[in-house]
Length: 211
Length: 211
Image (cartoon, rainbow over all chains, first blue to last red; front, side, top):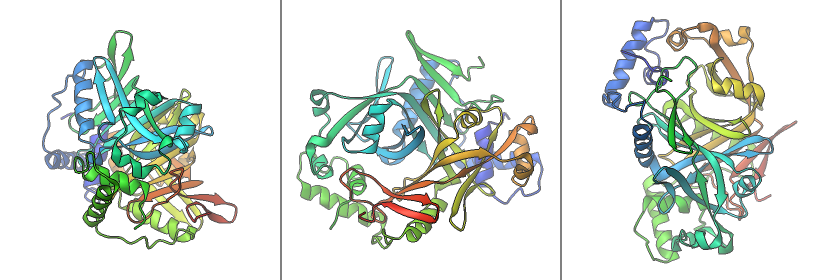
């Protein structure tokens, strides 16, 4: 049985106290227990195939609880993070090789200011139940008023005292990392997760097709 | 009934489809439904008290599923995010006014390299069930080998083919943001969450004690 790093961390998490002062065999037992708890999902995704990884990463993202994601931005040379809503018509979409994420904010918000100053951003979707996360990296840009219009929904009125502050954004995904315990894991010594990179001709596995 | 922005977003999330083409009253009904689902928690936390906010934020963090958090770092002028394990002896701790987070990584990992180059970081803990997140911002520094030693646990052996790569870190929290739907919410026009800032004399509410 190959042991992924995150799987072991999960095992440690799920079995706190069981293995105090114990040996590797016991953590292996804990790992087996975690796999049982999660339902055994053999690593069926072909990690040499960017297409297979991309499709599964997008499927996993759809299952994110509450359709929320963690958006991180550059703030005064440091990092800021907050949870944002990604329910339809927002969220992760794909058009051929283009993967992009639509989200909304207020023109008076910090993230609006931060993304206007530095568009490089990361959005992470996390499902604690299946120990799965997908990180999308790339630049975000504000949509034009005309483009943004199609994203406006009547219920949003209540979010904006001044509806002219409504602002729709698009993050163009250039890199994607995915970890899903017992399902998609890398086994590299440097702990790098499975990762895809956008190229001019599509998507490339940069980890862990055993480069 | 005062309506927080995040509460409305949550209502929108929980009641998808209910209010297509409807009016504000219907989103208010959805909001009431969400409050019911979450269990009614009156906003009992005094938002003018940094002590009350800090205590409750740390309590909420303890309830984070899987004891995991999202750590974001500066990466080549952009942002990288990943989920990290924070179970004891790691995690968020407090000593008087000092709030700090211990975590571990490998000296061969990206986050080790990134934090060595730019220590400014953000750690976000998210509980989708209660629609709660807490973000901790501040610089992280690697502990000395002597300090790190007390954090080593035997089960970690399996994570490190080379145990000399074990590396323990400490994030000193300088700013903290918290949102917990129906419980701790700000009502500012710029969508800023409730926020505390560390000062030389303790903690200061910078939002939303109605400054």
